[in-house]
Image (tube, rainbow, N blue to C red; front, side, top):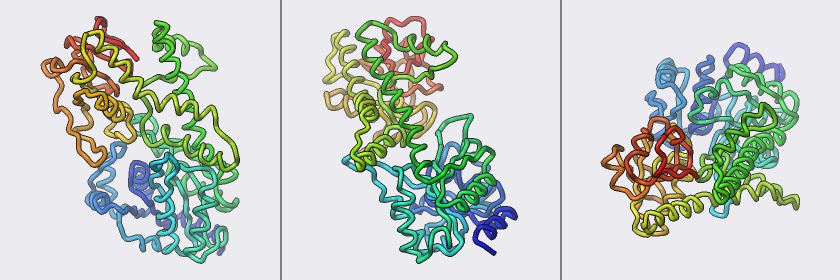
Length: 439
């Protein structure tokens, strides 16, 4: 039986053993979905703590239903391990590891390389390997493929299949989860494309779209997030201009989005956060330079977005000045350190950079976030306020709203008698606005 036929048979009768390399915010939901659809699944991670939690049925990802994870572990459909030699047991493995930037803001693909080497050492003939981590176009074929062939002695397309299928995870999104977000697949060869698409069709409750190559799928992922980066950069720049002109940018956006075609609303803020939008354009710009090409529009938007934390503190300083307060020594409360509303994730959060900028000017900073009791930055743990009430608010010279959580009483915040700098327009329904200034 051919490799393709053997894999299709395993998919159809659900004897294909699944693997996920990396049990973070992308990998664990993917592993859960695989197991929920009847496929024995093994999760791999370098973190013994994550592995222990999964095997105990203890959830650490907000987008997963606790009972789902517990039931799958108890039934034996899902388990986790730090033993990479067990790659030999799986027929399909998705690589879902971090792809951060290094200190020079260049792609750090060390996690992808290390994972690929580990898989290559233990993979057997007949396996499917799919990279899901966001990366620059060419990674699958230029980096992953030769490592797998070198480490395993197998031949891509003959002994194993290889593809790229970009993750599309939006933490906190109540509508679109891993299971119902349309999936892209780009693979090395037509047979691989067909089989990998079948795998995802069997574990997801949504459409799977096949493109002609891994590079197309890789570029598509970067386009999705770079599109957002550029448009956010546009509204951030307009926000700065509108402030100078005495125009409310939030009202401008609301007015523009009444047009039923040709416009999509994006909103300004204190900067960009999360693992995708602030980072992905750097991957594209880095790869473009290999071809002697500079992504000028992308780089311009990145410059604007990267400067927003500094601009936020500049504006805050001017607000304090109107109340005859100096930024140096001012007591400032940062309201929200998560990178987006209603989640507990502070990766690349602009609020952290805003805090650092305030401290650079000598302000005394505290924070409150209903989802985050403490955060770690530069090796230190920073504790937040445990409660938020009028008495607590009145201890501060300024409240700076950097994340718009929906479970915060902004009426109370606005009526505490303290100046409020709202960078997210969450106080839009507060009627008495004498002490409120919008970004």
